[in-house]
Length: 128
Length: 130
Image 1: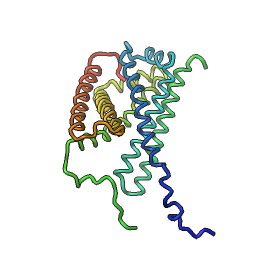
Image 2: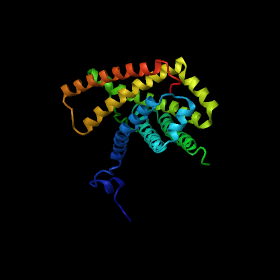
Image 3: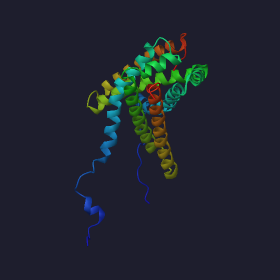
Image 4: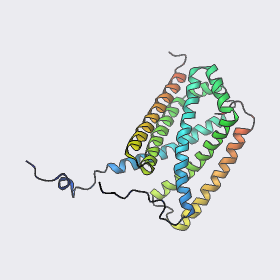
């Protein structure tokens, strides 16, 4: 039988290190978004037309679907982490806080799934 | 349960304009997260076909959403440059008071330039506007 209290069991062992994970992920996704978002905006501006044909051809050509998928993953990840911190800092009522956290995380997942589906569907058009 | 201190204590500090930049970073971040919905809507419409895409660009190219889009692009410029400033701080660069004030000026200047460029791109005649 272990008579040590839960607190006693963890004292002196240092932190779990988990808190750094969120912070680090936020910075890492921010760094990745620097080239990805710049690439996306420059590519859009360089398109002579933003009509259906030009946009779908651009999305499907070369490595563009890959970069677009990475952009969507990183954007949704970064958005989820950022909105989470904002909710944790400013929403104090426990029920609303949990609800808002779940809703924002879920919304980011839905956006990610929809965005990836759209890119894949455009990129694979004609092949399936 | 005993009341525990919560962070951040917003109202006990003397106001400094770098604080305004800090909260603006969060506001633009949340605002950009909403812009993600518009981006995904645009992609989904392109995936759905030409008719749906036409409907989406007509909606996005209309005046109300065009102004929202200007807001998103300006927020992007701000969040981008101020984000680099934050990354610099995380690396231990530019933490002195004077340096932070100077970089704040750079952030505001770049955002204004970005706002002007975005305004030009969105409001000069072009087919559709994502």
